[in-house]
Image (tube, rainbow, N blue to C red):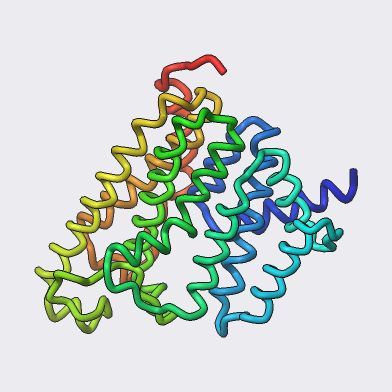
Length: 281
């Protein structure tokens, strides 16, 4: 029991460091689902932390990847994050190819700094975010018909993160948003401040992509029982709030990281609990 509590604490703290919006929304899943969500996000955040470290911890990432592979082979992992995830993976029948795609996108961050076309960006997003939607659908035991929408929700959320995190990603030497078709050569403030109209139009176009994917994803909400939909819809709403804030002032992405306050998230949880239609399990 003590060991399980320790694992829960590590997963919770790892998840909390990585995502204010989704962490606070996820607190409102039923306990058994919340525990599995923390196990999932503990695993993905640890992998992400290796490649986002300054300097990047290549050795740590490949060691993590090998320890995961060893756990799949039946070796007993000392790492509670990996052990919990592999247990979750087996219980929920995750496709191992989804995990391989995730680790592939994380490994891409070690070598690929610029995604020049939308196709390149979407290749990265599949592993970094769309498969997370697939994992979540399995955790909530949703029907297979929901899977395309789960992927689309992961895509939409990742894309708004790329827009929000332009400056942070530049500090890591990365550009995820494609510039094909734009007169902008880079997304540095020096470049965009010299072409403010072009930058605002560019951000508007990226937000339209996000909203199109988000709208498609929300068609899948009909598959989600209300007790699970409340936190999912809340996170979705908060990403929509982030998009609206950036649309009003695109240059805000260079001044601060746009994130809703915890109070705003909790108010949206309360509202969604009242207004969302109930669905039987």
